[in-house]
Length: 137
Image 1: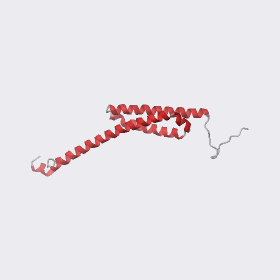
Image 2: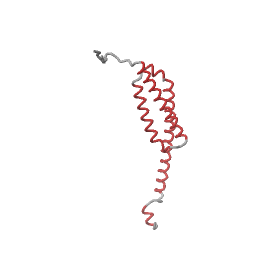
Image 3: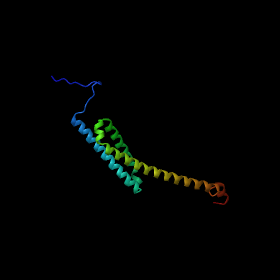
Image 4: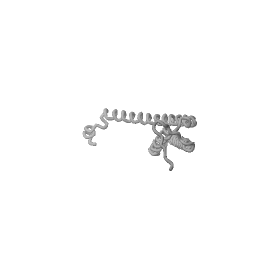
């Protein structure tokens, strides 16, 4: 009878060549999918198409989690094979983050300008409830 022998904690498991190729392939596909999503995000940012950003953020979060999971199960040599793709991915993430931060800053500045205008309007009595009542509004 054939007995199964499972490795102990002291015996590291080496993936079979087929398994290693599958992980490399999965890593490459995950990187490719994330790169395509980041390019799409950049197009949306450039075209001011913010209505799709919430769904895109969920997809990006899912793919980043998938990438983290795949990387944790990948051999160092396989990661080195994808180092250029990972570097490009990092650049795309940084570029999009810069665009998103720019937009967030612009929105914040606009909100502050509106808040300041409302404060000035209230201080001159324009929106004072007592003044409105006094003048028959």
